[in-house]
Structures are given as structure tokens and as C-alpha cells.
Image 1 (cartoon, rainbow, N blue to C red):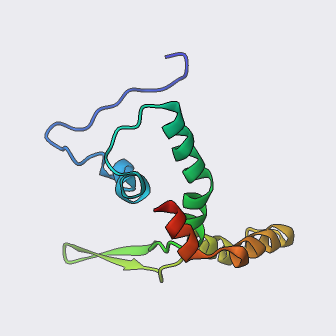
Image 2 (tube, helix red, strand yellow):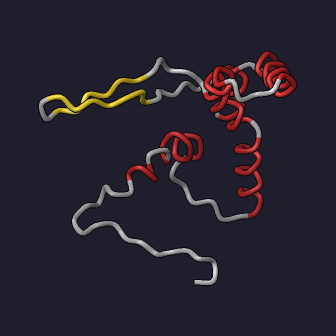
Length: 123
């Protein structure tokens, strides 16, 4: 325990406890890479290059996500209310946390991207 990490397990008979952690495995791992096993260094280099470039840009600039705004519990039922779907780039731009230089760089990058070409390169 030099690193200060603690080993945990799921609760008994609750196989879906790790669903929160595993929820993006399909969209971020299985859809672009499939279910094959990749063993060689060349394959690892290809996967790392894909995640550093095309897939990162596609997910952050072209792939909208739905963010939960609030949850209300009414008569034993939970009602979830979601914000309008936006890309992570749009969420960041609207947050007001970017400086003018950062916003300009991101906007230039966004304007230079072609989502259809990115998707073709990923596939």
C-alpha cells in the first residue's frame, strides 16, 4: 500500500455496481476498436495515435452529450431533467472559464475540423 490505493469490491449479488465506471466502454473503446485483443507494440502505437488525435477531436468537438440538470423525486418516482445536448467544446465555451487566447485557439481548431473526415479516418 505504498501508493495509498485501496482495493474495493462490488457488493454481493450486485454485478452492475461498476456500471458508472464502465458506462463509456462501448462508445469510447468497443465501438472504435471492437472486441479483439491487441498484443503487439505496433497495434498499441496505432491505438494511442487514434486516441491522441482523431478520436479525441471527434468526441470533444462533434459528439454531443446530455448533461443531467436536476433530479426530482415525486411520489416515489425520480424524474430526471436534462440540458440540451451539447458537445464538450460547447459546454466549455459556455462556461466562461476560458481566457480570450484559449477561446480563440479552440475556436480556430473547431473551425478547421471536418467531422465527416474525422469519422472516416477513425473508421
